[in-house]
Image 1 (cartoon, protein in one colour):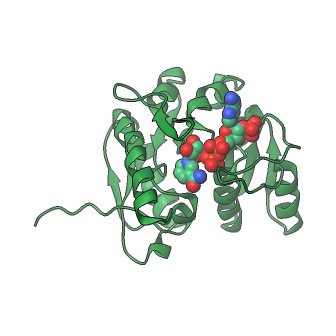
Image 2 (tube, protein in one colour):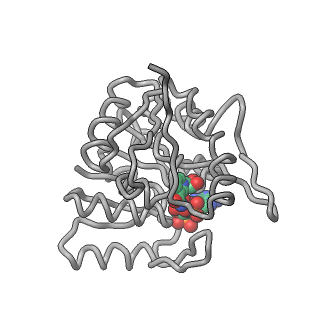
Length: 230
Ligand SMILES: NC(=O)c1ccc[n+]([C@@H]2O[C@H](COP(=O)([O-])OP(=O)(O)OC[C@H]3O[C@@H](n4cnc5c(N)ncnc54)[C@H](OP(=O)(O)O)[C@@H]3O)[C@@H](O)[C@H]2O)c1
């Protein structure tokens, strides 16, 4: 399948690499495909051009381009931009490139000011809802934002079954994301369908707790399991 990733950071490159390994064609995207970005902890990433070249040399269907290029390329789109800027990134994309497509939003609206992190949209809305409102013909599904990218692409690495959450207005898109993307491709075994896209605000509001867990446990390789009494 052709997958267009809006974004070029650590998530875009790592998840994109996993999808390439699985045999899909992946285009990541950036405002400047020749520039090397840094992860949040300062590690320099390959430029999108180098990322695509290195994968293509291994015979994989990797590409890079503008946000509009990736949106046009993908049969399915993944939003992997800094969440406070996801709509800004999509502003350069013609709405027709999203029409009818499943748009998987894994971005988080984190906003850092010194040591304080807040959410740029919260309580009554979320990034995913704002994308859905701006592109009503897209089938937006919120998922994968509640784990780091290492867990995202290899949930079994945690050594126990944990939960992934899914929300979105289109039941068929939620079903495809749950059964195909999450279970068949990425190896998730427990997917909790939270219903319509307004649930995305809860998924995004989990981030302050995730950040505290990161601090308390000293590891980003963490996730939660929801237990319901029998
Ligand atoms: N890191 C993780 O393990 C993890 C796990 C789950 C979810 N997430 C979420 O996934 C998203 C991507 O995370 P990341 O760590 O890969 O990278 P990131 O640094 O959060 O985001 C990088 C991407 O955001 C774009 N961007 C930033 N400011 C922009 C602006 N003003 N206008 C347009 N685009 C802008 C960048 O575009 P350029 O390429 O043009 O610079 C780049 O493609 C975030 O929302 C994050 O919260 C991350």
